[in-house]
Length: 159
Image (cartoon, rainbow, N blue to C red; front, side):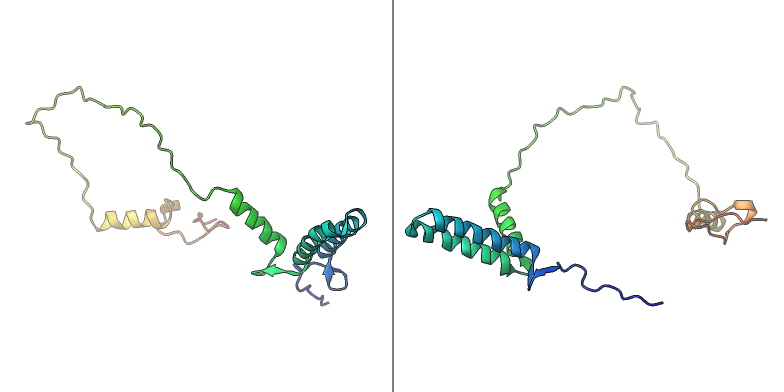
């Protein structure tokens, strides 16, 4: 049985004509503010309030800036001016340093000699096996285990 896979699921639902619910709310809010100001304020003050409110509500409804809604653009614009643009580094006062003084006296004639191990072919092979198998190289006498568990790690063979 085949089912249709929904496409464009990130788009908002259209409520009234081409308007989404958010766009409709922006238009209704602007319209209500203009209507209330028309009924309560004189004509000169009405135009001073109505024109900016109408432009803002239309911009919030229909304008997109770089594929972002105008409300998102206004929020970013407000944050740009609210946050400081100059960063100042405040240096932390220096802590007093602790000096370690060695109490043992070493004579110039005393020499410490470190004898390191020498690497030959067998030691290199053992070391590479340990590194390749993450330390599990000698499980049940095997040098290179070939069984991996479900986590991708080497596991011992089952008998």
